[in-house]
Amino acid sequence: MTEDWIHYFNQPNYKVINAFEGLDEDRLKNGIDSFHQLKTVDWDAVDIALIGVNDARNSVHKGSAEAPDLVRSYLAGLRSLSKPLTIVDLGNIRGNTIDDRYKALEDILLHLQTLKVITIVLGGSQDYTLPMAKAVRQYQAKYNLAILDSRIDWLLHAQDYSANNYLGKICEQEGVAPKDVSFVGVQKYLYSPKQEAELHKHSYEILRLGQIRQLGHRLAEPVLRDADLLSVDMTVVRQCDQPAHITPMPNGLSGEELCQLMWYAGQSDRLNVIGVFEQDVHDDKGHQGIVLTAQAIWHILEGIALRYNDYPAKDLDLYRQFIVYLDDYELEIKFYNNPDNDRWWVEIPGEGGGVDVIACGRTDFETASANEIPEKWFRYIQKKSL
Image (cartoon, rainbow, N blue to C red):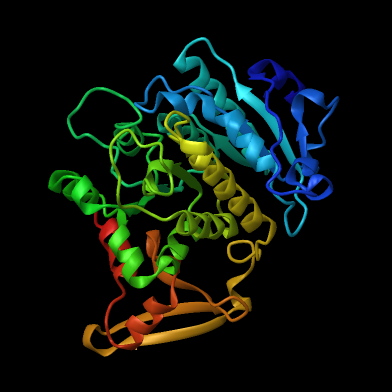
């Protein structure tokens, strides 16, 4: 069983670097158990598994192969969480070939999902999103993928597979393709009109950096709340906050914005597989990007620790319900609201005459109240017609 997993992993090798003096007793490291040092694991009591992928052969950021243990050094040295989580660090995935590692990661992630353990993958290169997606798809027939990136890693009609061109293998492969994909933080001048048209063809959601800046990072909260799988490319962060960019990147998310979005992601009651990739250690002045990666992962953990156990864990009948009638469209839309945290959901037509419920924001309710169809509601209607 899981004890045999020891053969899938190399033991991490890192030294804890405390974030500030006097933290020894209250640092996160004290809540992280090493799988290699445990005789047995009570998986029913485990909340989080950490897995390192020290491979970047398919990426231009070759130094990201060295990131997992460095990130561990700074992550373990941050303060403990507001509520304790049981965290097991499985180590760094083994494999002679890339395909060996893909398969090992896929198998382990599938098993961890059946054990109800949330997994955080420390990359490494972002092409490892593919085995993560395969594992999630095997666990649940319909899943949502959210991506934090400045670009769209889908080079249409290109045959090569890499960290810059992995999405086609996910979105167009039968038995792997997600129900929905959302892109957060992309910059419009960094992807082509053809790429944009391809995303619109699938009715995927695009939240550009400019939209997040104009309307606030809370715009991304419903997107991240509905994600089952999250893949993060650390080059989504601007170069002044994350120096290790192969190409100059004056614009992007700030470090603070990234951490806020990661906290939102952690708060999702659906999200159970997370990957953080492309943090190159080369040209990373003073390990600034590595430290930011560690802080971003801390925010995910903090969000998980403080989850509300909202829908789908909680019955919608426990929430406030609002029915909005749009006269111009002769359309009735039903919203749900949790007044304790001001989270919103909306009903959309489902398969077979039923209804589905998706996360939305207060602005969607306000849009409907102004006799306009919310964009999120309309996008899902478009997806039904595909």
